Image (cartoon, rainbow, N blue to C red; front, side):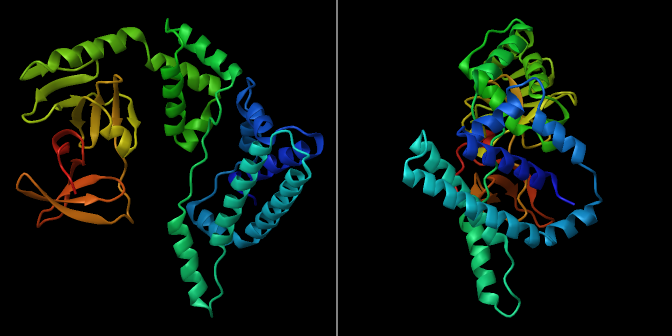
Amino acid sequence: MATIKQMETQLYNLVSALADNYGFDADEAFEFARWETETDHVGEILKVVEKPAPKKEVKVEVTAEPAGNDEKIAACRKNIDLWQKKLGDGKVKDADKQRDKIDKEQKKLEKLLAAVPAPAPAPAPAAKVVEAKKAEPEKKEKRIKRFSPVMAAQLKTALESVKLDMSDALKKEFQQYVEDLTDDDFRKESLSDHMRTFAKLKVPAETARVKKAAEDSSDEDTGAGIGLHLLSAKKESDSDEETVKAESTATVVDVTLKELQGIGMTATIDPPGTFWDADNGRFVKGPEPDDVEDFEEATFEGTKYVVGEKTGRVYEARDTGDVFAGFIGVGKFKKMTK
């Protein structure tokens, strides 16, 4: 039985085939069907066909993927040939957009080819496939590629319901909020529902109280909580960070290492790896552990640590086992270098 991802690919191919025949943009049409109507038509179709399967069966499907890959590879090659022919014949309205479509399809084809297992008697090609995967890591497709006028109007309505004005900063925050949702959480509700939830998280009264508490506590050696969800705070020496504890009901947003390092004022939250983002009035946490990443040894303020090359996670090296302590370039490790 086809997976949800395969069904979504087939739906996109259907829209693309209609676009090629009737002369409209496939990406815009697909996004319109997903986001610019009150109902996510594509998501509703996927819900109908989606059936939960045991984890063991999912593994079997993954190993049995080559047959499906053959069809996808053939479809990619067909699309590339067709789109290149139209580009060469001058039958497209926007040549740059057409070239972008061809580039995306070419990358998709390369990923499919890299996933094809090599024959058992020839181990050398299999090694090349592994190298190709490392050289070009898979990129997660954005859920909101373009903020259309319809989506902007819906977000504006949601924000006005909690007495907030629309701004470019809030639009970007909402896009990141949607990208940070898990697949299950994202599919549970429509985009309009996510907008209303986001708006409630940005209620002015709570945001003002939290920011004011953060500013007041920065001038004290010790202080009481940074916001409604903070219980205690203590300023550390030689650092602009404050150690605090958060209530279990606080909403914590996942951010990248680069985003975490870019926050001007942070406060460490229990458990380790979680922080209060005083710049934006929210709780954040850095990247999760990566089982396959490499580590580098580093000595900082007389203590030996190991640092993840991808995630930037810092572990204190102990005889009884490494203990997670934070992130490089953040909080007490702000001046730490590899």
